Image 1 (cartoon, rainbow, N blue to C red):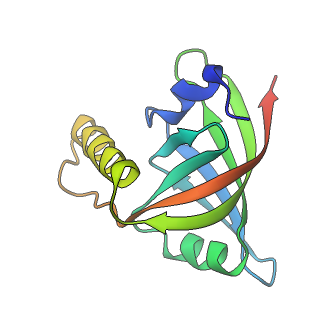
Image 2: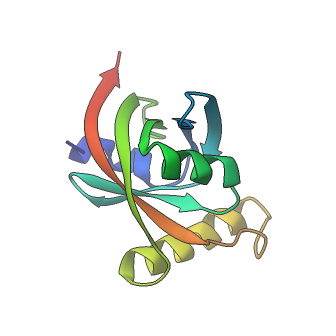
Length: 129
């Protein structure tokens, strides 16, 4: 599902956009600092301070993510579904290091704190033309 041409969009150079709904169907949109490639069927999103988003995906695990390739500005829409959160391990450590690099480049070093790497299953991917 996640193709090699999408990988630059999962580097954290351009923030991603996440849409969720709670159990009642009330929507929420958030800008995500980091969408991180785990494998061709999974990605991780950085959980830093998105309390409403986290509440929504715990009630309704389905979400919609838009990612952008910074090299050519290709867009992809992804239907994703929350699976679990990781607060330690290889994915968490790599995301934490990358988040600090992103923060450093924007003059916000030490401000962003990764609470967890939230793992999502990729249900579908559509490239926008």
